[in-house]
Length: 249
Image 1: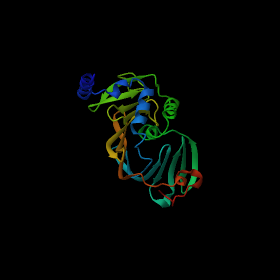
Image 2: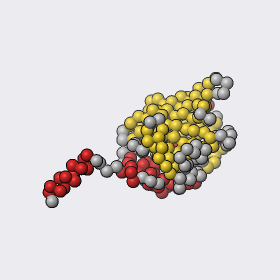
Image 3: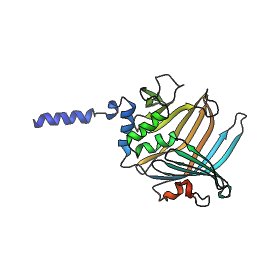
């Protein structure tokens, strides 16, 4: 019996069992993403963002955004100088917009980049799946593919279909890499969003660059600097009722 166990152990070392082979559905994928990082992923994140709009005429527009996240579910974006009082607070499926320090509008909105890139690792799997279905991703459609030489899981579309809502997850690291959704300015076109330049951060990861494409042309990019995780953040910073432009994270 001892010899048998020794042989089995050697076989397992030579041919390790792959947990990824067991992932054959959106449910299993989201659960695996959560379980992989639930005990190590950071709960707060701050960074400075250079936002670049790439216009059709070849010109570009630059803005500096200051972002902070309290995970899961909360993101604050302060745009430009403090004196402008311009900001967005995304909290638990709702976005509130501020200008000149005053609230100008508020409405329900899910940020799928926040959900798939960050929240999935810190909130119950059932909640993430509920949001995905609520945002019209067809979770019954699941396949494997490749992107830039890396194996991927794809939820929301059949293989070869780039016209349906879908998201791509790196098979090895179980990180979000790619999303397709209708373009906000022209729903007849598809917008592709990519997370680029992933960096390991204290038990989790951050993509230091985000690229948005329409018809395979880059229209908007985000480049992050001064990235910090695990910093103390006051929950009131993410409460629209307590918004103060001068009180940035």
